[in-house]
Image (cartoon, rainbow, N blue to C red):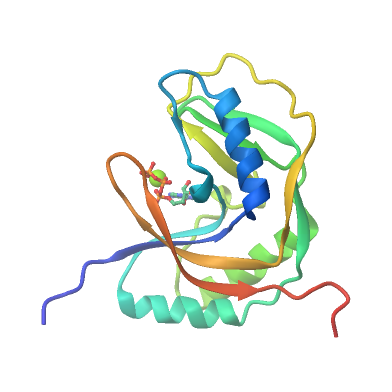
Length: 183
Ligand code: ATP
Ligand code: MG
């Protein structure tokens, strides 16, 4: 049996349909001609990017994620941003919510315990964000009037299938977060 090709995976928070529709509409309004809008079903907040792993390692990721403890929380995206190097327009949080920091810490501890290296400089603690469009050219951004958010009650392990036009994301597993106040 030959080696299976590595698989590209990451942990993420996925918006509900309503928040995704709001974000997609926002992307449509903000991104100029020539930019690549991220479709509603692909919008997400990356929690931890893992990268290429063997299929065997995916089982390990699922087990450690199942051990992560985190509380459900309301995520509010209340600012817009633009990273000119890669032309990314995004919606994010002015301040990372405490439950998001705790969730990231618990996941990062599990990952490092199992020997997965993640770069926490790009994690959600520094700039929690949902990318809306790529290859955008933006001179100025409006203020985000009404924050867009969703109730985060789970996180997911996602496989990314890269294609020349756009990545396709496949949910491999979801991990529930505890409702605050639940026994
Ligand atoms: P494409 O690379 O084709 O533009 P993509 O960036 O959406 O598509 P991936 O590169 O597989 O797809 O990335 C999956 C998610 O992980 C995206 O949210 C991406 O921004 C994020 N990501 C990718 N590489 C890193 C990295 N080195 N550090 C942190 N996050 C990353
Ligand atoms: Mg990428």
